[in-house]
Image 1 (spheres, rainbow, N blue to C red):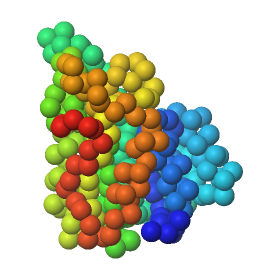
Image 2 (tube, rainbow, N blue to C red):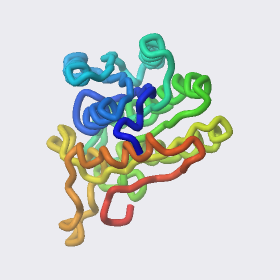
Image 3 (cartoon, rainbow, N blue to C red):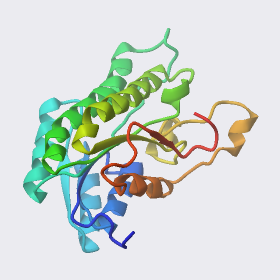
Image 4 (cartoon, rainbow, N blue to C red):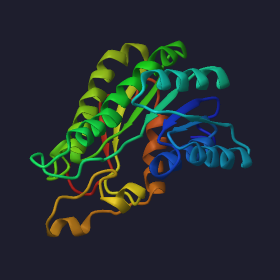
Length: 250
């Protein structure tokens, strides 16, 4: 692999203003990609884009609300207009708004979590697919969670949304493999981000019990090597797979 394995590629990353998304955006730019940094908070993505530009890379900051289909389409159009196409989509934007039992949950928070984590992923994929096809293939990488594979108490909305994302990844992979578009899930495990500072739900939280003490508590930068691996696989590389950074199963 060359020092710039993503040279000539265009990557769009949602949730790129902080945490895992920011780390991936910086790493992809360093690997040679032109990067579209998308998120709700304009000031954060502008800082990331400026940091990429200051180190000689190409970046565009685009504000997006992933729950708004028109906003997502405008984001995708801006990426293609700026750089001429799209090769890589990283679906990373996520929230955990409901932190109660199902019985005590607030429906607006429960549905709001699904709207960002699952509907938002659907909108992003749908908008990106024609542009990936136009390039002769590409990559969609979804940032999943172990909690979407095994569940967790008082986090039903987050778990259900990530379980849906897990299945959406597989459905997309089956639809898109004839077009040389691979779709894989990256499960980071527990990562120290602003979300985990609030409630511990970014990535996947280890199940309660003595064995959880051995779980790898990562920084966003620790997710980068796997994100680069998935972005640099050949067009006929793995698809419909979950790549897991957790030490423990699930």
